[in-house]
Each structure stands twice: as C-alpha cells, then as structure tokens.
Length: 178
Image 1 (cartoon, rainbow, N blue to C red):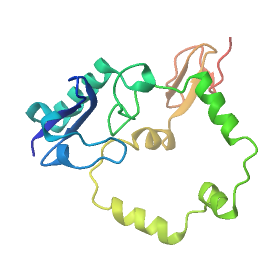
Image 2 (spheres, rainbow, N blue to C red):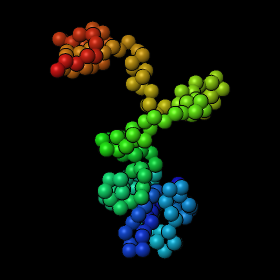
Image 3 (tube, rainbow, N blue to C red):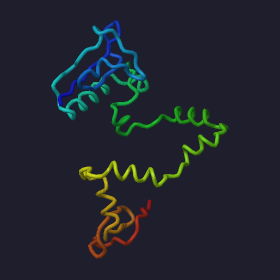
C-alpha cells in the first residue's frame, strides 16, 4: 500500500493541519479538525512507504509547529503514534491541570475506570489478540531481565550482566551515588 502526506490550508494558504494517509483519508472528517473545501486540501507528496510518510509528516509538523508549541498547526500530536519524542507539559500546563483536578470528587464509576481490575475475560481477549503476532523485540529487555542477568554498579554507572562477568569494581545493585 502506498501513502501520502497532505495538508489543510487556511484561506491565506498557510497550512493549519498536516496528516498522513492512504486512499480517501484526506477527504474524511477528522474528530478535532475542520475539513476545508476541496481546493484547500493539498497532497504534499504521494507514493510513499508508510515509514517515509510518517517521517515527512513529522518533519512538516516540526517545521510549522503545533499551536501548543507556538506554531500555526491544529495538530494535537506530532503524529498519530506519538505526541513528540521528549515532549513534556510545561510547568504552567502541569499547574493548570493540577488546579483543574484539585477537589474533584470522582463517582464510583469514574474511580472504577482508574483502578479497574483486569478480568479473566479481558486477559483472554488480549492473549488471543497477540497469538501469532511476530516478535518485534518489545519484550527483549524484559526477557533479559528475567534471565540470569543481574544489575551491577560502581557508584557512577549501572550495567546489566551475568554474575561473574561484571567489570572490576562493580558490585551487585543499581543505586548510583552523587
């Protein structure tokens, strides 16, 4: 399947949304962005692989910047897969979120959503969904940790290796000093 990167333009020709799609995606209503008239929906580049399209989309979003970053775009995320590498809320935004949540009383149903237990039925659905999924390496570190490897530190650096294989001066543990 081939992909394209598109932009929605304001009347003055400045983009207000950058997206990636295939097929008719550019012409489908978005939940948070107004669909402009057809003459202001522009394909920036066509015939891309998925990875090429993701990269171009992210590059254009970083070029024009989102409104929350001081730019012109209505994009909420850098792309649909991540808000931004290393992006964090500003201290002011954190304070506003905290102030907005302070003193709120949650209903028992809301609390259930926060602290809900995973049912056996849910676990089985997840298990079935993952059957046959190719190994993409996401559990590699976990399996290394569960193997014979252990953490060692010299106070300044922490490494994971098999006991007896650690460099001179390293002792069991992960705590760093100063």
